[in-house]
Amino acid sequence: MNIAYFFMTDKGAEVVNRLNQAFPGRIFDKSNYKEAVKELWESCDAFVFVMASGIAVRTIAPYVRSKMTDPAVVVMDQEGRFAISLLSGHVGGANELAKKLARVTGGQAVITTATDVENVPAMDVFAKENHLKIENIHQLKHISSAMVERKPLLMISQWRIYGRFPENVRLIQEVGDIKNLNLDKKDMQGRTAVVIGMPSFCKKAEAKCKAEHVLRLSKRPYVVGTGCKREMDEEYYGQAFHVFLGRLGIEYEDVGALATIDLKKDEVCINKLARILNADILIYTNDEIEKVDVANASGKRIETSEFVRRVTGVGSVSEVCAWLGSGKGRIIAGKTKFHGITFALAVREEALRL
Image 1 (cartoon, rainbow, N blue to C red):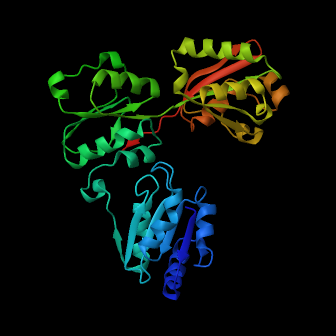
Image 2 (tube, rainbow, N blue to C red):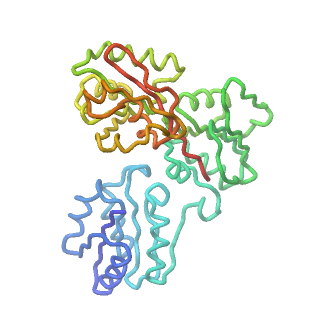
Image 3 (cartoon, helix red, strand yellow):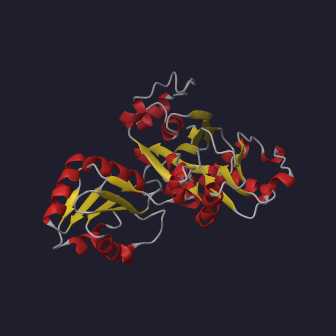
């Protein structure tokens, strides 16, 4: 974690130095702290103010935007007796940081978020720890309220979730086909809901449950590995991609990344498709690709080609890159050839844990 420390007094400096030994960061005194906060707000993970909380609040006020993007902010007194989680307690990690800093000084962490006080799951923390995207953040407060007040909550997940939820949560998991999901209308009365899955699944599940407040937590787990001839026609490349996904029954919005070799990192057709998909582009070097055991990639043999090796220096591009991009997950479709183009598809399969 990239931390910035700020202090006002000599005693505050002593506390900061102790904290910095345990969790190294950058240190600023009262002569330049305002300028430093402004400069670092977008790039720093955490701000620790050893000073009065009012000074800290007034300093950060112009830059506070969203709980999903703001850095963690912790305030401590100059004796190190209390570490107050002031901002971004969950997603930003201020709650955990406050606990760690308090252990260094022998002080007390002050946590005020209701889910922590009541010891119930926080959906923003669950999302962060499981690499899920909160699609409609405005619904989070309703879900948190239901958790804290132990009101009935329905949770529908495309995947299995390991862990135990409170008794007020009705969990329906490993839902393969949303068409087979049958919900009792009486059981839905008064319930808020959380739906977890690929973006296409979340939209269908939200429509199915018809709750007044539905939080969507999504993951785009599919990675498409690709290779192509130089200066491939963009329109034809897009059409081939459409056919490839169509054969597999995969939705565009569920593809999270395109993966390819560094030789193709500037290929216009690949970069244009990534923009259309709003997907990441993952680039792998020849050395990274060559290290892959193509005889056993998660239990599957990856096809290699001497022609591809002569052109690129490696025996496989699309399939190996898809597999690497998925975190060495499961290959769903091996190398699929079009004229001058290859695609392969793999899926990330990290378990969801509470």
